[in-house]
Image (cartoon, rainbow, N blue to C red):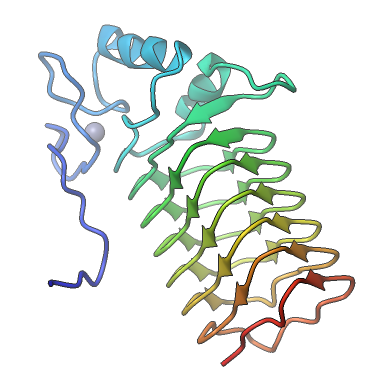
Length: 221
Ligand SMILES: [Zn+2]
């Protein structure tokens, strides 16, 4: 079996040079960020009807585009945006990425995604697996009060700014295997209902864990 060093983007790339966004059906053979208006509207309309968010792989998602996606998304029970099977694999976020209050239904992937500015996942709900493997956060990452009902993984992720996991609920296994933190993450009052793997994660110093509840002792080595 071949093991990949990084997750590859196996999809038809956008016709715009250097863009690895997934190609949308249409004459312009471009991604969501570079396609013609009717193509974009068609993709977002399908999402509004509850279709999986699979059209953002490798796409440069600037702030306005993210706003548009979240505004047109179906609503969850609390009135927040509901994204189904969101696959932001290798997407890039050149500006701020505000996912606060979003419900992610089904398995969600930010594998290999890159956030150039602050990213907020405050108050989010992930009903399926949440994969942040190989994700790079160049600035802050705010996961305050996020709830992960299934596995949460940040395998080999890089966090260069402040990271906040305070009051998070990790409903199943939480893995920080080989994640690299430039600043000590805040886990104040977080709850780990499954196993917590900090094995081979790199921190400037081991995080203090005030008020953190573990069902089983965390694994550090
Ligand atoms: Zn493109």
